[in-house]
Length: 129
Image (cartoon, rainbow, N blue to C red; front, side, top):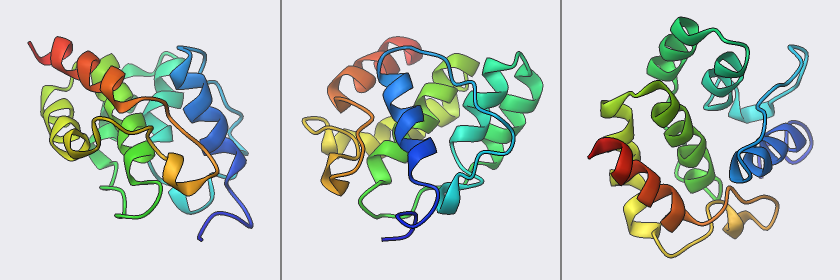
């Protein structure tokens, strides 16, 4: 699986941190592996107080590949969208994550989880009204 030989620890740590509403502060030299550029960038920029850059990074975040990390990567994108108030990104995330509502995001990989999707979908619904 791409990312196993390099780049797995940072996304796994970010997923864990987001699950527990913790800091997304990472050093610039972090190797995000095949998930870069990805949903981590907007979250890291938000943590640094760079809101306009985070919004731009969110707009440029590619859709995750439909692999074992699909829901986890969408979860990170959704967290950034909620924090930025990006309604379009939140609606896209809800649409992509709804079929897996009863699952743990990323758990199918056996390597990381971004937590229960039911909780995130509730947060997305509350944020979009």
